[in-house]
Length: 381
Ligand code: BGC
Image (tube, rainbow, N blue to C red; front, side, top):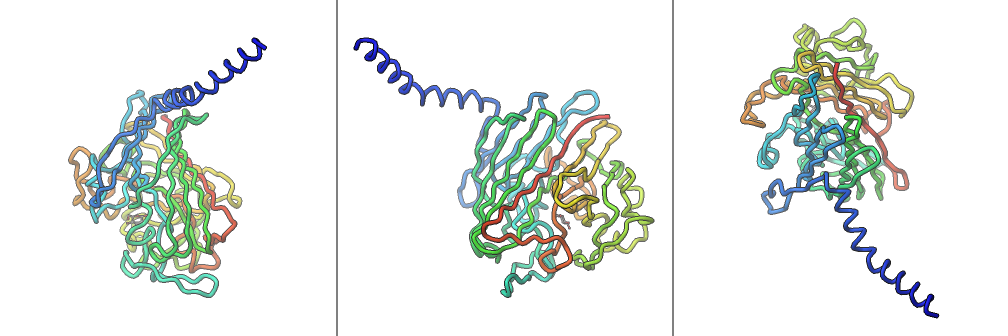
């Protein structure tokens, strides 16, 4: 009798202590992911920022406004950490109207939709035109301007920030309640891994991407960065940067990055596609098998020795050379961001896919799961 009584008492003590123990464990596990208030939006909502540090000391600071990567510090060839993304020191910089999507998560439809229109199941949907005649990066208030719910944790590969957002049926003209989750992991291998997933309750279109402006030297122009893109074709565009629907061969043109080439080597060439976009601002059709994870691109910067490899399950990548930066945006440390001081490699489905039946589909139906992964891996040479 006594023994049973003692046993029950012991179990009761253990069960009683469990919640406290689990909180203590959680706190210990999350110790390396501090959360701070970064600022408040104009309508008074709190915006938090999380600092993810991996076992090698690399650091990513990510905020709940737009899921924006505010800073990303990786080592150079001497092991010295440096911030390699453009952005601002405070929230106010990001919430201004002229913000060019620095570091943001982009949705519901990354890149352009021609004439702000598309049809699904016989119904025509109209979107806000925020880029001339077209819709860019999800409309006036895309996912880059949403406040995401955040949960930090320590995964087996490194610190994790899980962001979620419910984009309501009709938001920016898109059909269906879209429940989106984006998981950022700063792996102990110096990779920024981004897993995107989404579900809808009505047939819709989805194309999620990430919009960091990288500068592997940590400053200056990106014209000496060497770029390789694993693509034999790209999607030429009209003057509004909407694909014509053709897939053009890169061979023999300044669009050929199959061999590593300096960004500036041919950017000024008399080539119609470069003139239309004021530089590189096109979607490359990645050489790949279906939606398998493949090596999409490599960027190398010789003074820092930094290398960035991009891997993705997506079929395309937008290579944008910061052509529209013109010195009017004042960024981190009071620096005016001049033209071509950052480059973007936005993994994605091709622009205007909802209006291009020959392009891989961006349609998501109820019951289906949208799921893509992109990895930016950093090393040195
Ligand atoms: C687009 C550019 C645009 C930039 C910033 C890129 O994804 O391709 O045309 O200027 O985003 O808005």
